[in-house]
Length: 99
Image (tube, rainbow, N blue to C red; front, side):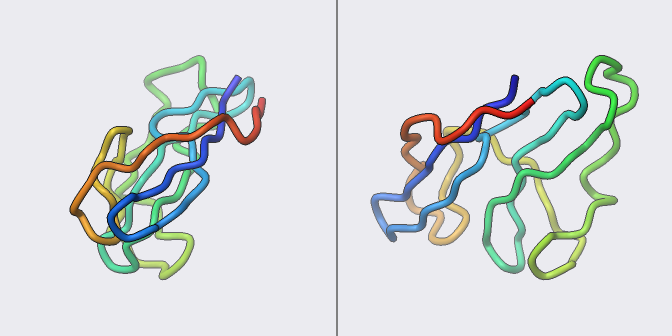
């Protein structure tokens, strides 16, 4: 079961709700990514077969959901804020669980 958390930067007040790394459900495998252009975090589906690690695809082939550029990079908690880069994001409570 995957989980979505609330993340917040104490330096610039950037907030986002993402998994904070890989997320595994019964029907998909996701990864939190950051876009170098729009400086946002997104969870993107990297496989529709989470039980088969060989089915993972490169996030370089996935466009940013916001700006549609191919500049997504893997982001894992505790990673730096994508907006200001000054501090790691604080992880809050679980917002929701998904399958």
